[in-house]
Image (tube, rainbow, N blue to C red):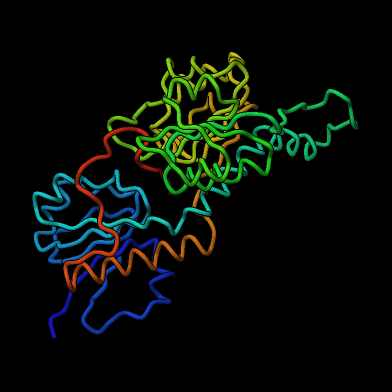
Length: 327
């Protein structure tokens, strides 16, 4: 029996310990702080935080599959993988509901100033109820703008009706399910930014979506609108967003991802109208375990049969609306 040697991200050791490893598979853990070694491994299961470019692939000349742990795959050079005949997979679907729920947690926390209220309650400085204390934005009758109506964007949009919100969305094609269920309207991005009271980002990170929300895009948003990002940090020009929040032109923002994770700028951290989370989009037991099971299955299929359950296309999405971001 031939043996398939694979490298698995060390941060996944807990999941691996609960997984039955077939006799024909030999696993070595790759510590977070260690670079990709020169090795004869045929499979690699990395996190999104590990860059896997041409140089890393050349260190693994026998590599057949990169089974990414996450729905995103911007950490992998797809062109280099294709040139070397290496299959790339991701974990779509496993984290959809968790990320959609987290998005709504951010929308509610930002709109109703939950973080500011929690800090005040803990501070000991709260002196009682006041009629104008920490007034937030009610959601009933407002418009939610979904930028990227993929799996996650669709689930976020479906929940808008429960809060009395209308929905507009951007996409290269009509999302008939979203239109039927909540009466959503498909509009161009510029029109969405002008119309929406809450803008929620759900696009993949590509050259086209990098700084999709730049100064010009942020200026199109309604004065007093809210921006929420649970997709990828570089989709937003963080400096331009900070300027808009400091000036008060935008009411607030809820962010789960950042341009230079784990670094968050001091200016952004100082803003009371920014709710900041440490990349919790998929952080539920069910989602993270589901991601592991899917990535592991892709790894085994790839090294044994060369056929992936969730292959990633080597062609970049054509525009900002086709992909989805998640963690």
